[in-house]
Image (cartoon, rainbow, N blue to C red; front, side, top):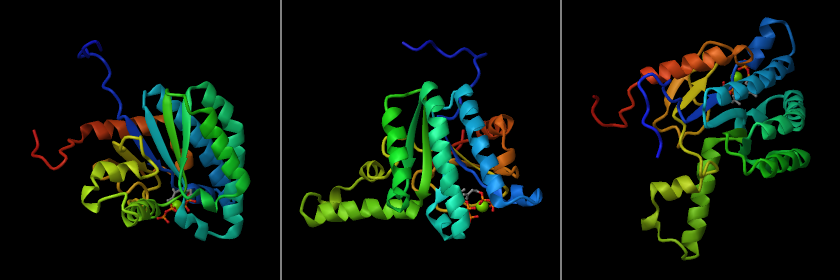
Length: 244
Ligand code: IPE
Ligand code: IPE
Ligand code: MG
C-alpha cells in the first residue's frame, strides 16, 4: 500500500504537461540572427526541459515541435527544421534512453522524409519499455487531422458492418487518437505570449489548465516550468461541477 501523504511532502506535480514551444523566430530576430538560430537554441531548451521535467516528477511531457500548418513555411526553413530534427533524434536518443524516457511521436508521418521516419521508429522501438518519463513529440501534427483520421476509421468499420455507430463512446474515440494510452494533459503551457492552441491536442485538452508565458521558448527554463506548475496549483479544476 502507498504510504499516506504527509502534510510536509511536496505537492505532486501535474501528471501530464504539454508545451507549445513558440517564439524561436522572434528570439532570433531580436538578436539579428537567422530564424534557424532560434530553432537551434529551442532544441537546447527542450533538452533542458526534459531533464527538469524528470527532476520535477512529471510523468508525461508532450511538446509541439512542428504543426501540420508549419509545412506552409518557406522551404528553406522547413528543410533546416528537418535537419535539426534529424540531428536531435540522433544525438539525444542514447541519453533519453539511459534516463528511462519513453519516446513517442504523434502526427502525420507520411509527410516526413523516409530517413526521419526510420529514426522516429528506431527511437520508439528502443525506448518502448521505459517508464520514468513518457515523452511525446508532436511532429507534422494537427489535431483536426488526427480527429478526422479517427472518424474515418469509425466510418470504415461502420461501412463494413463491424461497428454500430450507436455504440461509439468518448472512450472509444480517445482510443482511436494518436495519443491513445496517454492521459489527457493537465496543464498546457504556451510560450511567447500567444494565446491560442494552434491545432494542438484539441480533444485531449478539453479540461486542461492553460498557462501562457511571455517568455520566448529559447529563454524558457526550469524556473518557468516550476512557475507554470505553481500557477496550475492555484487553479480550481471543477470539470463543470460547482466549486468547493
Ligand atoms: C516555434 O517557433 C517553432 C515552430 C513553430 C517550428 P516559431 O518559429 O513559431 O517562432 P515565432 O513564433 O516566429 O517567433
Ligand atoms: C504552433 O506555433 C506550432 C508549434 C509551436 C510547433 P506556430 O508559431 O506555428 O503557431 P501560429 O501560426 O502562431 O498559430
Ligand atoms: Mg510561432
